[in-house]
Amino acid sequence: MIRRAWLRAGLAIAAALAPLSTGAHAASGIGDIAGTWINPHGSVKVVTGDCGGRLCGWISWVNAEAMADAQSSGVTRLIGTELLRNYHATDAGRWQGEVYVPDMGRTFYSTIDLRGHDRLRISGCILGGFICKSQIWQRA
Image (cartoon, rainbow, N blue to C red; front, side, top):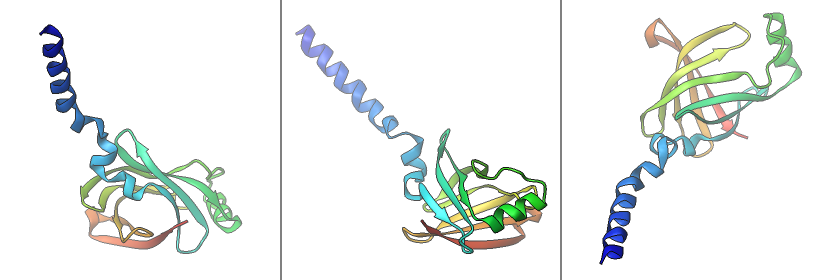
């Protein structure tokens, strides 16, 4: 009888904790956007993934032209730089955070919109999102 009570209590606890075991990663939809993405110029690749329950993206590869642009702005190291910072889901397939632009040395308010499985639109904005510039990135 005690054994059955413990089993029922264990099952009840497991059932209560099950929604928590999926974690922020699943709840935020990061799994849909996690991976390697390349910019429209083919000059930068970014690996996106979870960083403390938020979405982030780090530069994994750059071509010589992108590296030269960054160096002319005083940036000496690009690989490993966190380009996409602190994004949180605002809707299905949509995130809000900050994008770092190395050749400008600045961080901007940003949104990311997933456009199917292999494309996303990254926008960087000024004036509280009033003026934005967007790019369509492809899954690499």
